Length: 246
Length: 118
Image 1 (cartoon, rainbow over the protein chains, first blue to last red):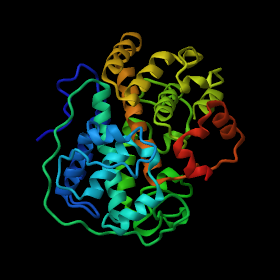
Image 2: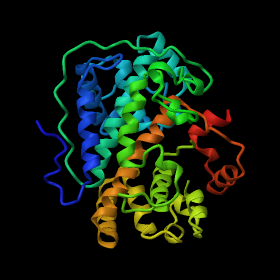
Image 3: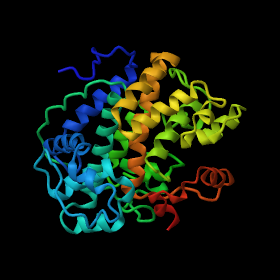
Image 4: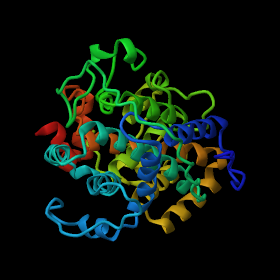
C-alpha cells in the first residue's frame, strides 16, 4: 500500500520528504537490532498516545518526576519501563537522568533496547509533527514484518559522553565506517550503541533539515525555499521552547 | 548556527528572536516574525496558535516556505529529544561565540544544562 502520498494536502510537499518518510515506514515495520517489527510498531503507537496521557500531563509540573505515583494511559502491551521511556522522551525529556536509565537497565530495559526505542520514538514523533505542523492527518502505521531482531552491538564503544555507551570518533570503522569520516559531533554519536538508529534519523534529517554535508554551508541550499538564517531561526525557537541546552 | 549564518551572509540580526521577541526575529530575516511564531506554536503543542500561525505564515510567505519551515521545526522536535534522552553534553564549551550566545539567551538555567555543566 502506498504511504505518504499526501493526496489530501493543499501544500506542495517535496518528493524527497515523501521518499524519506516512506523509507522510514518500511524500516519501522521491520525487525530492528533489539525489537521485533511488531514491537517497533507498538513503540510508534505509544508515541502517538503519549501526548494525551493524563499521568504525563499531571507529572510534567511535578518537582520530583521520579517519585510521582500513577500509571500511564497506555495503548500497547509493551513493558512498563518501555512505555514510561517513550512517554518521558515525548513529554518530559529534559529531566531524563543517568540514574533512571541505569535503573531501567537493571530491571529489563537494557541500554541497547532503550537507544533503539528512543530512535523510533523521535523519528515517528518528528514525522508526525511535520503532519501536525501542516494540519494534516497522521499517516496510518504500517503492518509489522515478521523476523527476529539481529542483536547487533558495535565492537568499538566508549563511555565518555552521555548516559549510554557510544561509538567514539575513531570507532567508525568496519561495519560502522559509513557513520562519519574524520569528524563527528556528540549528537551524531548519541544513538550509536544501535548504529541503525543514527542511520535512520540522518535520512529523515536530510529531507526535513539539511544533509550533514550541507550543514557546513551557511548559504541557501538548492531545493529549499528558506535560507540558512530562516532555517536556524526556526530551529532555535523550537529548541528554546523545548529548553534544550545542547 | 543563526549567528554564524548571519555573519557569513553579512546580515545584521537580533538573536533574541530565538527567545520569542517578534521584532528581533524580523531583524534581517525575511518572514522572521511569522517563522518564529510558527515554530513556537508547534513546539508548544497548542493547536489553536498553531493554526493561526500557520495561516499567517502561509499568507505572508507562501506554501513552499510553510512546508520547508514545517520540516525544520519537526526535525528539531526530534533533535532536542535525541540530545536530552541520551544526556549528551555540548561538544565545545570553549568557543567565544558559543559562550556569548549562551549568555545572551540565558539558557544555562535550562534543566538539560546539567548534562554539560554538572
